[in-house]
Image (tube, rainbow, N blue to C red; front, top):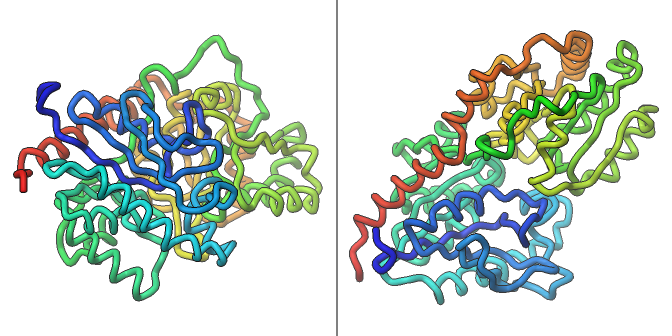
Amino acid sequence: MTETNRKQLLILATTYPRWQGDHEPGFVHELAKRLTHCFDVVAVVPHAPGAQCRENMDGVTVLRYRYAPERWETLVQEGGITTHLRRRPWKWLLVPVFFAAQWLTAWRVASRDGIVHAHWIILPGLVARLLRRPFLLTSHGADLFALRGRLALWLKRWVLRGAADITVVSKAMAPLVVSLHGGAKPIIAPMGVNLADRFTPDPTVSREPEHLLFVGRLVEKKGVDLLLAALPAVLKLVPQAHLSIVGHGPLEDSLKAQAVRLGVSAHVTFTGPVAAAELPCWYRRAALFIAPFREAESGDQEGFGLVLVEALGCGCPVVTSDIPAVSDVVALSRGASQVPAENVTALAEAISERLLHPDRLVPSQEEIEKLEERFGWGVVAARYVTLLERLSAARRPS
């Protein structure tokens, strides 16, 4: 497709970097910028305090719509929409304006012969269907697993049945899409990780033998409370163990209080969030990365777990839970081991075993290469280019 006849690709999302180097999850933008050689990419995403309303980021035109006075534009960051709505019910008042603003902005800029890529079923998927353009729908997990009310389920079905193609980021998500859609099988197409030149091993960096690491949002489904609960048993066997918690979110205060109650606060550091460019340094120094994912009370759970790939790509061993979504990653590396979800005793035993025997189950270079073949951005972006070019080729100007 030449520069002069490239079609517009309109990306609709709720989670998106607020600026270059932002610590908020950036996988939608990482994909978007890798599509600019094929399409004129426009991302319509929510505004946030301190962000520009319009800018060009890595060749992507980013339009951030306003949906409230700036100090109230807090529906997305630091936890995600479902977490905010559950913890602060008043934020439901923001949802109608949030939805209308995304639809109106998208409607104003959408090309007549362009295509749409909607990330998440609700709310971007609703906007995509109402735009009446062909759209690819990608579900990332929370939009599929949570929001189980009758109206939400009806809306999900309506959106899924209107999509030209559907992708999910792990095999575990596919059966639920099939049941909601009524038959069509989604394409398994995870987001990517920069395993080529960012999340890579560095033999010049020495691992700190008793350093435990968690990276992620501080929300229920990440299971950080389980990790803290396991720490006293770990310290009995490895008294010098120390846990770094990288990230922030609505549970931060309660987790800090839990560490104090358990008497482990001297062994825990809450670092706050760090930019993606800084994360490899943490993975390379840590002795063990821990991701004790679990199903939240709302039904929300991890859709894939990109942090596992990031850690393994840096050569860091991983302990995670046995939720279905992580099986796609765990199967590719002996550096990742699993314990039953929400089993604190098993989690403590696995952590202690890995700390006491650090040379066991370390990801090999061959396994890291297999991860890149499956989850590297080059492979992932090429898969999405194929899907979107097929959708674009089928599009006829109206």
